[in-house]
Length: 397
Image 1 (spheres, rainbow, N blue to C red):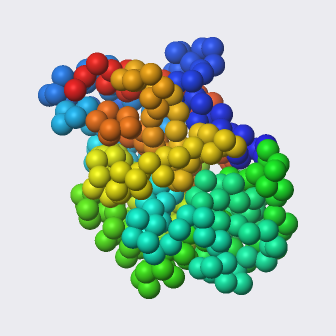
Image 2 (spheres, rainbow, N blue to C red):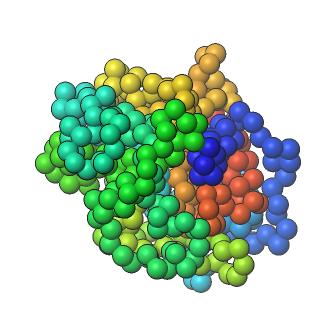
């Protein structure tokens, strides 16, 4: 299994409480910065003090900011810790926007599933039916294989950020990348063996799906995301930028922590490099709104949602745009959580919900490191927060 997929798989297991390493309960907090964020409120019965303390561990461990919303039914707790900008020291607020990275994939997959519901495409259609001549491979690749990362198509990200260094980030920071060019570069490399356990988690899959949506609808992906997902789900603070490198409205800055040296402010960059794979900007509350709307029938038919959650034997933790895993407090035996996680330039995000969407945790933090994983102390701290937040929802609502 390649390093990116192995890291994602390991994180998926950790995220959902299937396994946690010894010592997770003690996040490193030496040289911890003073808490300068805005404490959340929980008039709903959720333990605001305990949730805030768990969130503060993320900033104590080295994330400049952390933002979260925990929800049970109509009751919710929203919290923030740390600062929007390490220079101005302005306190972060619970409703601040951030780049949610690969949680975008769940939203794009929802549009694809809607089009399947409408009979405008089928998940087992070959890609060539919708994008003739785009893929050079003899093996037929289906839309389903794009959705669940079993296509074997190389990841274009590996061409641009082979080491994840700051130098690579700086080189590409303000370049515009058309999805067609990203795909062309990626498919110059051979297709992975579909029978191999080393199939790549590939952003190219979603670049292709973005083009499929545009071909099927005659509209831009951004238009379809707004019309089909953001508006019906009530996601008022969510957008899909493709060219503008700057975040609008109240937001937290994102930082890269290099192996040596100070934090690097990576907030501003041309987001076309992520596009359909990871380009959405949102808030913790809007992420909960999205996954709630996905669960309650607002966005998909029951059959469409069931199809989206159908698990493949090869990657049981990743379905058609969703990640799945065991719940700390399932209402029914075998029940799992559904959601996704994101890792971008300076930003990390995570959102998981119970199958009915009543119990939810969404949060983001503002530090990443070269490669997939962040600083070790921060990695422990987000695991702690997720466990605390999920535990707070048990037996409620």
